[in-house]
Length: 389
Image (tube, rainbow, N blue to C red; front, top):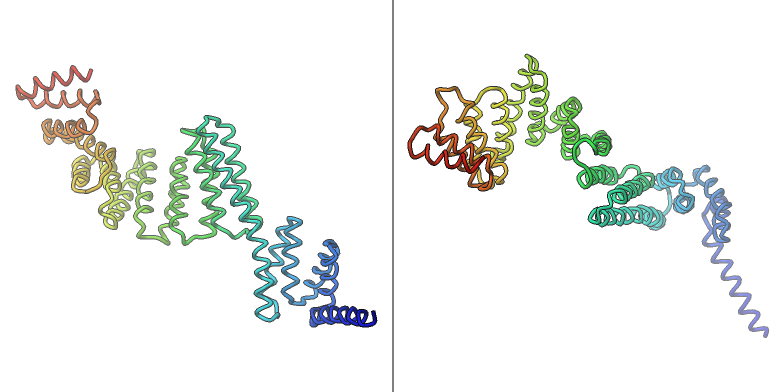
């Protein structure tokens, strides 16, 4: 019995010595906080950890526990402020790393849970969209964005969360809306990307999406301001140069005066520079051709559209639009002495090869063939006109 008591006494003494060693070097505030924390009294523990932080003890465990306890209260401001204390700590590197990893794990669990929740909401939106339930789909997109908002309270500097929120607006618009009905959703996307550009002005991708959103909203003033600012940082970005030209075309067409003509002339400069940087992009060439046509320069338009035929991998839709533009130019837009019904018929035929059931094309091809004046073409043209009616 005596021997057993002695062993028990030594065990108790060992525990006391271990606890004393564990507390050695720690501030009185941290020792008190740890005691309350160990007892499960999180209210008193938080109060003493806060006292330790206010005393500037520079102990990593203080900030790890503050991160944990503020997170439990959803006090994200306090949590983030506590996390900023780690660089001031004077613990041994091993201890500092341990406690900072503890805090990282807590924060990671929080934002990953919200991210996974947002993914689940997007999947649900896809399911309800397929089922034809637009009301439920809108609600799922709303819930997904709210999870990103919560994630941004936890990590306010995570631009990928901001981007995801903006992309959710775009995804909702593309899924549910057409025309003006969804403009408020698109406007929210534009606001979100404007915030992204302000936070990351060196990102050409953020800037381009912002420009595109304002352009699609037909807010050409905002789009032009945004693209001109972006080009200061990215002067050789072909996509930005393209939009700098496109937005000026829209503004110029709306004005129809000297200022409008000036804007159209500026647009040719932007588009030509974009083509110099990316000569294999057929859309850039096509936009320039449209610009020359709208400026009343049909010969330049014809030469520009003709360049698309020399490019590879042109999508059928764009190829069709290019052929059709050339057909109309030869048929009626060129000066009368340069109009060529045979060449117009050739390009209408190329269009018809791409869309063989298009009756309007049959009729147009028939008219062009009749206008050539040859007996064979007149007969064929009349037959096509009859089919196309």
